[in-house]
Amino acid sequence: MSESGHSQPGMYGQGRRRRRRRGDRDVGPPGQNLSGPSRDRDYQPRERRDGSEDPPGPLIQKTPIILAKPPGERAKPSQNTPVSGTPVLEKPIMLMKARDDGVKPGTPTESAAQSSGPPSKIEREGQRPTQPVYQIQNRGMSASASSSALDPMVGQSKLLPPEKMKHSIKLVDDQMNWCDSAMEYLRDQTDMLVVGVIGLQGTGKSTIMSLLSANTPEEDQRSFVFRPQTQEIKERGGNQSTGIDFFITQERVIFLDTQPMLSPSILDHLINNDRKLPPEYNLPHTYVEMQSLQIAAFLFTVCHVVIVVQDWFTDLNLYRFLQTAEMLKPSTPSASHDSTGSSGSDDGAEYYPHIVFLQNKARRDDFCPRNLKNMHMVVNKLMAHSHLKYKGTLSMLDCNVFPGLGQDYLTTEVNMFLLPVQENDGEDNLTKAGSGTYPLFSLLPGYRGHPAFSTMVSKLRSQILAMPRCQLSHTILTEKNWFHYAARIWDGVKKSSALSEYSRLLC
Figure 1 (tube, rainbow, N blue to C red):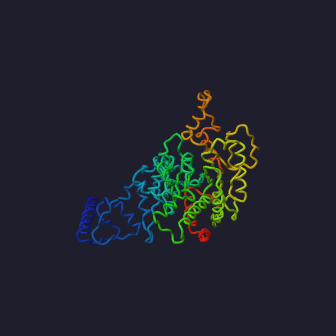
Figure 2: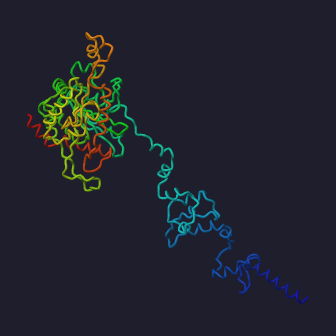
Figure 3: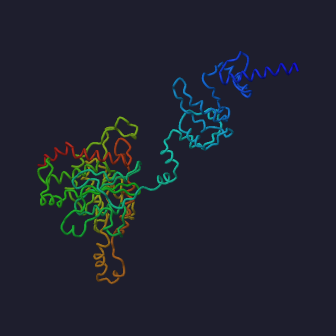
């Protein structure tokens, strides 16, 4: 009785004190637990150990959220907690997190944490990451760049061949203005060959350039990339090409077809149509001659090979024109401050292209070895004082056109090539020659004295494409760099003081 009597008042007294605590908020004597029911007693030592005081106002029971979270998510809020008001950037821990953690790889939280930041402890310790290696390497790239780098369609498009041209486009129009339409067909690579052509009117420049670039003699001439003269234009003595036409092949060979040099049809068009001349030119024939010199000087600066086409041997005025264009040729631009692209060339060295003299519509007598030797001797004497590379790089003897001649037959072999008349133009003459008083000749093919026209064109094409590709400037040029370089040269040619002074002396 005594024990139960002593214990009961204590229990009732404690219950009354608890009720006063809840209602009247009286604070009991120290040493007694007045914070709530008996289930809250486990938390009372922690609060005492932390030294925190009871907050004023009604007591709000704290939900143990932190204790209920897994370890992986419990560490995340501590990273974003600001220290002294400065936010701490989130580290890409989820990118490098091991598989034994609570968070699975590939979750949205992990992909969001993949953005940027220093490597985690797991990466420094050499453990294998859960993400592929290419994702780790592309952490600093933007989303668009990484997606395009991983897109297989983008990779296949880079391996596709360049766009094939179907016809020529203008590089310089009939008003002598530069055109930018050729830029889309050029690439950033340096293995290219630039071939230009000049010649008098009606010599077959456009036809030869079409056969060298993309067409065959059997095709219709109306489908040639450089359109030749039509029959109507031939009958009225007109010219087909104006300015400079551009075409690039799949083998990265750039062909430049030009208007005829010293063309009488262009002069006639200027006079009869009352076209206004530029203010620096007073006479139409001076303007036509200066146009021709500008085009020739331009080709001598931006081309590896320049083909000079003539349909009879030979016109001395054409050689005088070549020497004048060489004299007025703009000097090679000096090397820039970055001389890393120069390949051993001196800064003071001038660039001169290779010149090929093409004898088009050659007769059968021109293929006689004696006549061929005489033509080489004449060209060698006319070009003796020229800096143009006119000999030593193209040979008809190497083409096996003259199988009985030795290599020492032509001591000074000039870059000269002979093209015969096309078969469709010479069939009548061959038929007449074969159907004479000797009936046996009618059963045999006519004697040509040279291989067929298509064979000669094929040999010429192989010789032209094998020409040395010298460095055009003091720096190595890509196709796109060549385009900008050519635009700069053309602008310099039009504003050249030497050409202006020469035109003034012509008046």
